[in-house]
Image (cartoon, rainbow, N blue to C red; front, top):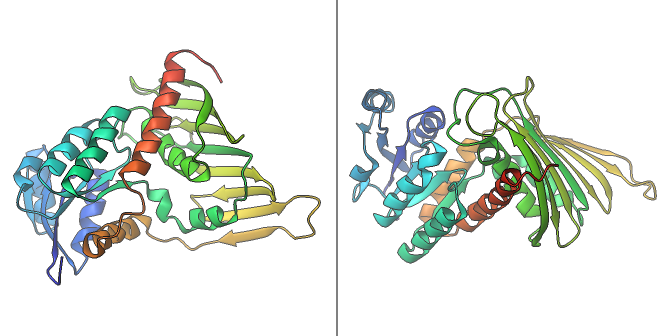
Length: 310
């Protein structure tokens, strides 16, 4: 897009939308053209805070911006993203990309037809300890994942599988691209009319077995996973940005511990999105990757509906 500033809007002025506004407004190469929210007063306040226009409809962005960040509630991702892609606007959509596989496929198709970039906000990909872990995993056999914490008071328009577990489903899709052989799962509602707790067991054709636990009912915030592979055991704490590698008994190598200082994955993600708009390269987490996580989520939700307990 040459030396001109990239014109970007943020759609959704809630919790994450406000963070996106702050990151983008601080970038020299970006002009934050507008912040959009269906709540007129919140849109006005956000516009004043970030020195930009506050709008109440994303449809007003057509012809005004190069790109947009979609940070509306998950249940509205598809409609807002479809409207913006149809208007020729590059997108960064918060995870999940959509709430159904059909909708995720349609967004990917729209982006391809319009020759637009479609990035999905799977934030753990910008966590340096995740990349450290992926560099160490060798032929994983089992992976156990836990993503739990107290109910945040937001995100209740969808269940915990799409809201929280989708992060781990994206990580899992980086471990294997093998077809799914079987899925068993259970879940329950506690604070909302959607699932607030869920457990799943997924078996893949290459032999990998994944056990996932997600909850927004716990007292303690946990973002962890453990991988058993041909080298031994890898324990990863995504929240504390640390990992420990224990090598198997037949190895003489000592245990390994790696820790990273706290960074700003959201800023790195938004900077990566802006860079994609400038250099034309595909995003790190594109629409197809977002769709893969939605597909796994759909299989888990189907197993829960069918009563296939863990």
